[in-house]
Length: 366
Ligand code: GDP
Image 1 (cartoon, rainbow, N blue to C red):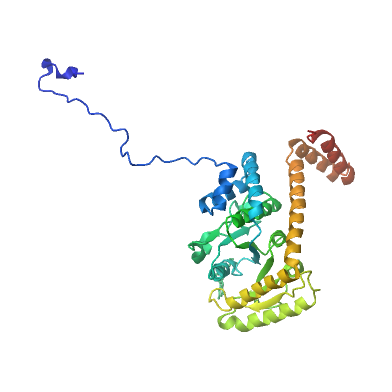
Image 2 (image 1 turned 180 degrees about the vertical axis):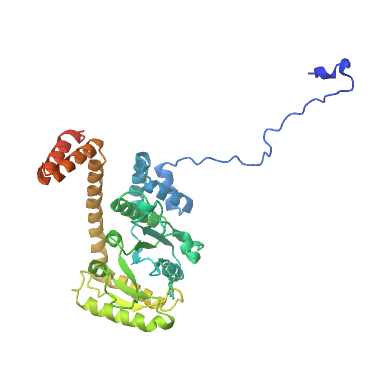
C-alpha cells in the first residue's frame, strides 16, 4: 500500500516501502534448547554409553528431594544395577588439613596411569549446615579435575547423614554403570560419616598426620578398627622422622586389635602427597589388599553384607522420615516433651502414646 505521507501535499517527504523483516536475525543461530527432563530409559541409555553430561544429570536427579525426581531416579538405579559392581571402591578419610585433596589428586593420576576411569565422590556431614560441600570440590583437585577420565562430584548436601550417604551409594551404582572402574569416596574424619563410607567401600584408607605428642590421642578407636590401611602424610623435609615415629606408634596400637574379619592385617606407611613420595608404595598395598580379599572370598562376602546393611538403612531412614516429618507428630512431640520435662509424664508412656497414635491413625492402610 502506498504510504499516505507520499501524497503530493506532503511534497518533500517520501517514505520508502518497508522491506520484509527476516524471520530471525541469524537464521543459522540455533535456538537455545530448554533442557527437558529425560525418561528413565533415556537416562539409562546415556549412562550405559558413558555420556558424562547425562550421568551428571542423573546424579542430580538422585540427589533431588522432589518425589517425582526420586521416582525416576529409583527406576534409573534399578536398571543400572545389573551393570554395576565391577569397580574397586576406596574410602578415604582424614581430618581437615590431613591432605586428602592433595593426595586424591595424586592418587587419582596414579590409578589412571594404566587406563580406566575414576569417579571421586564425597560424603560431607557438615554440608547440611553449610549448604554446600567443600569435599570433592573440583578446585581442590587441580590435575584430576581436567583429566578426561575423571569425574568429580561434591557431596550431596540435603538431608540426614543416612540420606546423604544413601545418595552417594546410589551414585556409585550410576558411575559404575557408566564404566567407571575406580571409585574414591572421600569423607572428613571427624564424625559418623566414616561408618557410612566404610559400608560402601572395599578398602578404607585413613590419612593421618604426625603430630607432636601422643599420635593416637583423639583418634577414635572405631575409625582405626575400620581402616584397612593407615598412611601418614607429609613425610617430607624435616617431618620425615616424626612421620616414621607416628607410623611406629600406629603399628604398635594395631597389634592390640584382633585380626579383622577380612584376615588382612592393616598396614601402616608414610608418604608425601605434595612431593609425590611413596605413592607407588601406598598403591601397591591397596592392590595387594584387593588380591588378598578376592582370593579368600572376603571381597564378595563384604559386598553382600553391605547390600543387606543398605536395605535396612533405607528402611530405617524412611520410617524415621515418615514419622518425624508428619506435622501432627511434630506437634504431639512438642507437647509430650514439655510434659516429660515437667515430670508430668514418664518418657516411656509419652513415647508409647505418640507411637500408638501414629500406628493407629497416620499409617496409610492401602
Ligand atoms: P584436606 O583438607 O585433607 O583436603 O587437605 P589439603 O589437601 O587441602 O591439604 C592441606 C594443606 O596441607 C595444604 O596446604 C597442602 O598444600 C598441605 N599438604 C598436603 N599434602 C602435603 C604433603 O605431602 N606435604 C606437605 N608438606 N604439605 C602437604
